[in-house]
Image (cartoon, rainbow, N blue to C red; front, side, top):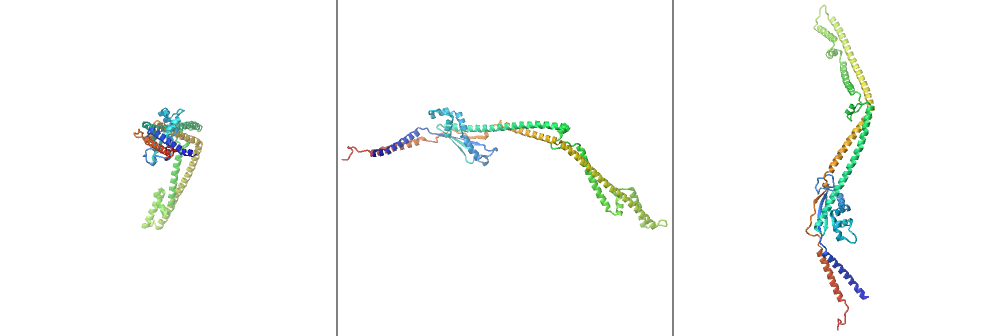
Length: 431
């Protein structure tokens, strides 16, 4: 029992030694690995022109998502096909089964390190390989495959948008055909000539039976209103004057021969009375009597004139009222015509709006088609292409030598321990 317990640590020590030596030999034999990096810039916004470090030029969430896309099965399988990695890697990795594309993509994923640069839209694609040329080729091919994938995705989206726009144009064309027939039929039913239909802008109303006549009535009303107001102001000013002031004002305001004659005789007789030009035939009393007669005659004529003024004001008022009635009647007639032709107006407005919308969508589709024919490498720009590295990044030989030496040291220590604990023979026993 004691012997078995003593042997157990020896077996453990031997196992550790074998593992260290095996790993050390593997690391010594294993070739060194080389690393190459390609750098790409992704466009995360629709507004290019910002610098790589401008916060507006990138979106952290989008960049992280694109990192996952780069190492996705779709991109890596494309790289496997482009570089024929199934054929190249079949010998080193083949076991009982042939290497599949998914297996090669998994191996490729293990050799890639895709890291975004902080606060930029730059992404580094680092590839490891035992061949420096292969590492650079893999990094560049992954960048190109991702660039082509983004371009293809953009084209698919653009093509989908163009298809949707083309379908919308067809819908609008159907609406235009229906509305055109409706406008033609309404114009025929309402007896609207083609000249009027084509000449009338969409914002104008159809169906004004005589717009020039209506404008004439409006102008006549405006003129009559101004005339009536002016006459009312004049009659009010005249009525505020005294009889003497009226006799003096009316001849110049509204010349009247009878009033002018009476006022002239009255002025002459008054002057004669003032100068005391009397004699036995013409006495002051007779002059005063004549003045009274002339004043009455002048006042009577003033009354006639004022009455004619009042009559003119009344007539202008009646004229204004009649014109207002005519305008109201014309307005009712016009509104009736407008109501009758309103469906035609609305149909024509809808038709022109639909035509404008169809033309707008057509222009947008033409722009999208022209944009689709242009190169779109700006979506993903390869800033820096990978080049073969001259120095390896993983030196396996020093590690292998260290592990081998450690294993041999443990092996020597184990042998020494076994030698000390061996059972003594009779030759080795002390005398």
